[in-house]
Structures are given as C-alpha cells and as structure tokens.
Length: 189
Image (cartoon, rainbow, N blue to C red; front, top):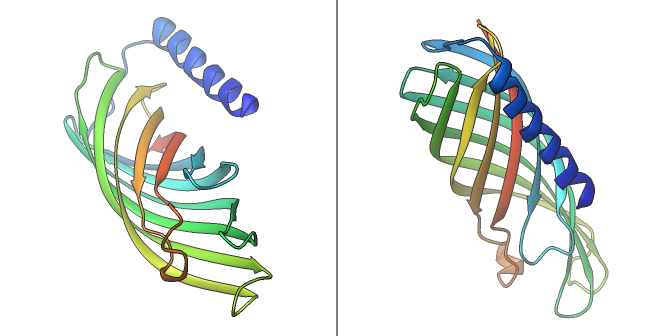
C-alpha cells in the first residue's frame, strides 16, 4: 500500500510541476490511445491489487469517451468455511466523460460507465466443486478525475472510480464492488 501511495503521490506532484511549467496546450476534438495503471480494492478482499491496461480516449471540449481493457491481478478472499478463493479480472469498460476545462491544459472531469468483467476464480479446497471457474459479470462505475495536457498530442489523466459489481452467485456474500484509482497517458493523433 505504501508503494501505491508513493507512486500516486509522485504522479500528482509531477503533474502539478508540469502544470506550473507547461505551455498552454489545448487538446480537443481528438482521439488517442495509451497505457493505464492503477489499484483496485474490494472491501471483502484481503489485499488490493495493481493493474495494467490500455485505454482509448476521444476528447471534445466538454464531452469525451474512454474505452479500456485491463488485467487485474489476484485478490484473495476467505470464505465462511475458512477456504481460500483467489479472483482475477479482465475488465472491458466504456465511460462517458464530462469535462470542465479550467485552463488550456487542465480539465477536471466526471465520469460514468459500464463494463463487462471477465472474472476467474481459483478455489482452494472446501467447496463442492474445487478447481477453477470463470464468468462474465456486468458492472457500472462513477467517478471523477483530471486530464492534464503535457504537449499538443499527449495528456496525463488521473482518476478515482467506485465500481459497483455483484459477487458470484456461489459467493453472494462476497463484495466485489470497490475503489479504483488509475493513471493513464494518452497519445492523441
């Protein structure tokens, strides 16, 4: 957790320093792609997990869209019987972004979206059907963030999302909803 906080603190500080020294870049009516990293933690999971992904963004002056594909590593859950459950996810999400430009190169935004969460379960003993299982779950998210233009064709975004996602039918008492913090770098063309 300390590494995660250090990473995001470094990103935020570098964003603020870049903002203070950057020229006034305006990115609008453009599309781009780039990498994405982040951290996801469900309340019932023992630990959170880092994730990596790819995002595609389209940005107008006030409205935009984001599509992303991520890989979220293992989160462990302890069941009521004391067994271990490991969960991995591959989310494919789409979000609508509403921007409130404060400066030429700084645009805070609100977001809302839907996603398909390919969820892989690894059961360790104590279940009727031990082994691996997978399913697709539909979830939605709400959040906010900021987009900082680094040049005429690149922007850094940092955001927070709350994910609303139900647990598996077999694990209805486990909460998969949770907090998602992410940062991305988009190269526009």
